[in-house]
Image 1 (tube, rainbow, N blue to C red):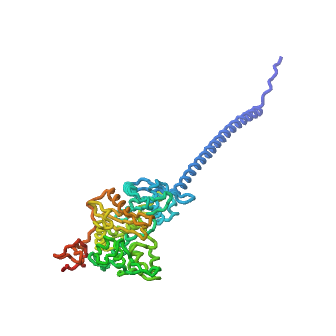
Image 2 (tube, one colour; image 1 turned 90 degrees about the horizontal axis):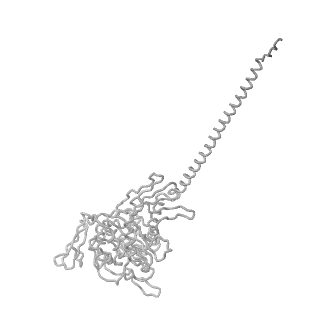
Image 3 (cartoon, rainbow, N blue to C red; image 1 turned 180 degrees about the horizontal axis):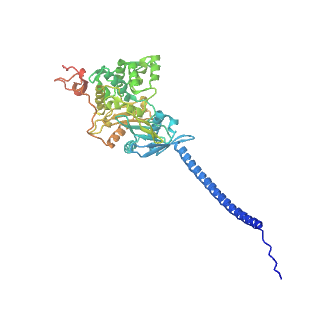
Length: 489
């Protein structure tokens, strides 16, 4: 029996089967690869989305912080520590600090605005470096709180060095809701203006000296509505009707003599000096003088009744000229301003000469007499310190001033008085004395003494150099070129 032959498989069919298998395997592999790639893309996309979100959060935080930084100014004390912030809010600028520092922060804010402008100050992360000294502030606050002035009204103090650097300010008020900054408020200086407007300029011009004798008598008699006449100006005490040395006029703050000296010197000359030397605004005095004559503003300039007033800060600055040989620059609280780490403002000394060395030293010694026995500032005297200064009381007893200085410090103190009556005690003198007692002093420091000024023993009766028969004498100071003749009595 013959065997059946197997039907052979054709090669073409095998190839097709292989192709089909190969295609199926290839498709499976490609699908897996695609899935893998898609997975990777999804992962990368997700990671990118997360990263973008994180970056947005970080950017938002940075921008938010930047926005916050641009609305906050940091104030640093002289020791580099922060003591306050200025915050710009919808309702205005907020002082973020302890209540007791508000007055000083106000001084800094006004000065910083003057230097750069409000908008520029908030154009970045701003830091203001100031002259503020916490220890000296504590001395001021302790002194002011130690004298009960609240019953009279407001009290304001400003302490600087003799180059105008403001160490501290302080104020207190009878009304806790009173937000006035009395260190910056313009008011009458009373007789505290006299060394600046009268005695300094007249000595500089050679018109008066230590021993000049001037009669204490009224300049005018003012007619009242009822036809009676009153003398003007008046003194704290009745007119003596006798001649006084210039040194006595300063020591006892005799108004008649100050006004007479100013009239002889010339009101316009005095206004020119105050405007050019200290930058005072006397525009209203000039208007009055032009309209009614110079005599109409004698009291404004000689007795401190300036229409624009003066500030406690400015008075502390003005008096430095008598402490450092005739040099002056406005009192300042801001040393440097940085924005985003870059210095955009730095204080540079702008000292200028307003009095000669001779005039400054003679005025210095005249103002020392104010604190001597019988002087109007006697209560401010501190044993062992060479203190000079001048008192001032405005019309109606509204303002009580004392601006005093040592070789290291200038302190202006003003106490308001709402009673309308004279105060038996002079609170400004008591506060000043406590300030000086609380500060540390370098007893070796001295005032610049001009070699061209000579100390002379003066006959108080004649104002000349005392002779052998002169019994009532005092030490006086004169320019070398203007030494007094010998008294022959």
